Amino acid sequence: MIILEVGINHFGKINDAKKFLNFFLNSQFTHLTFMIHTNKFYENFKKKIDFKLNNTFYQNALFLAHKKKKKIGLAVCDHKSFQELSSIKFDFYKLLSIGIDNRSLVKQLDNTKKEIFISLGKGTDKKIKDCICCFSKKKKLKLVYTSMSYNPEDLNLKRINHLKKKFNLSVGYGNHYHNNMAIMLSIAYGSEFIFLYIKDSLNYPKRVYPDHNHAIEISHLDELKNDIEDVKKIIKVYKNKNKNKMKIKINEIKKIKY
Figure 1: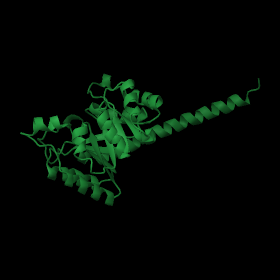
Figure 2 (figure 1 turned 180 degrees about the vertical axis):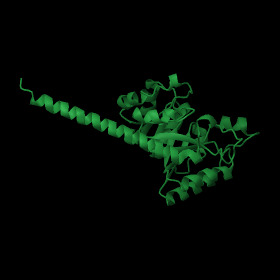
Figure 3 (figure 1 turned 30 degrees about the vertical axis):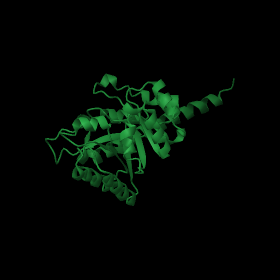
Figure 4 (figure 1 turned 90 degrees about the horizontal axis):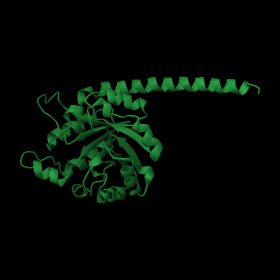
């Protein structure tokens, strides 16, 4: 599963947000998120840019998505800014890594009874465990491994499998790398879903987005999706061949008389 992330790449402009939404509604993708930041963040930028979208936009986005059997999620990091949208029933939520210690926010998310994706950032196993323990139903939780670095030595994708074994939860990959290499490699390391930030540089070639360097141009998404599907097939064939080899070895061992 691929989950597209607008983040705040709409700059608070309803028309730009609608362009992302319309692309999503007419695409083959089924999940999309918008993001709300902290109130302090909004206050710092308000004189230059008002990044907030109004409640009516979100309600309409959900209505249109549901008509096409698609889902809209909300990425959150602060209980105060989330409270302002608490009356809107999003289909799922993403807890951003900077909010992983916010117990008030975690409680609010738990009360939604919806699917929660926990973005880990540089969160330690202890922090992750403490966060998970605050939720009443573990089965609603999924973990999103993200390396917040463009340095290939910091990717550490093997942590995906570590997290699966450690917490017995589904684990995916949140892309913050400057090319598609990490996305493909994450699949080989067991990523079960992928979060991708998106941008519209084709129509706005001079615009620098908040997630510019790791966001995927929307006109490239179909090609990327096909590449991801090809990688999954290659890995599946490889794993099946290894399983068959293992079965042959086991059968040969069984034939041996001691």
